Amino acid sequence: MSNVINFSTNISYKVLFNLPDDKVIEVHKTAQDNFDLEISQGKGVAYIRASGKTNAANRIQKVFPSAEIVEATPV
Image (tube, rainbow, N blue to C red):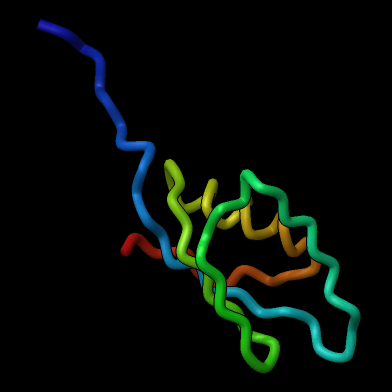
């Protein structure tokens, strides 16, 4: 019998975020930041695979440092 719990590291999350108005958007996207992204009128939605809500939100925050994360939910 084992006491090891295996947590899934490959869950899809939907992260909603707001971008600042009337500002130049700073983007730091690399090849490792592989996720689907939709941006319209200062609001964004990203579909990202991560090990948890916080990790998913942090990955979006890394790409868009000035973004305000609204919520991250499993898809």
